[in-house]
Image (cartoon, rainbow, N blue to C red; front, side, top):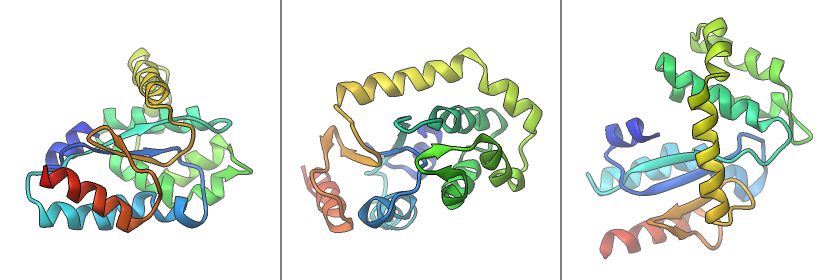
Length: 173
């Protein structure tokens, strides 16, 4: 997330994303916001916004998806893997439980070396990143995903306009 944030020149907006499918405002504020609304805010405010994503594994088996995503960084395919995972979550997240084989099928087209990915998922630094995200989530009292913070301020109600207003308020400071 940090590398991508630097590429996009985005300050301190974070998106808590669990990777399970949600409906209504939860789904609307997943990657849709990151890809469209946040990109537009970034274009409107060059060099003032940075995106950082933290993974919080709140559902059964979502720790598998977190490890898979973090391991995909080692092959330079994090964003492609994240997009594939989010685009197909209704196929592999069944009753809020992850089906690992279905996740692997969902990312087959990303171009990852799957044997290397499986080995990397077991690397100590992958668990360390996940642990740091869990600690941070506990400190921030994150109980659901996605959850949005702007410069440490939690978005109180979900919606595109609320996010845009929170970011605009921070930029104006």
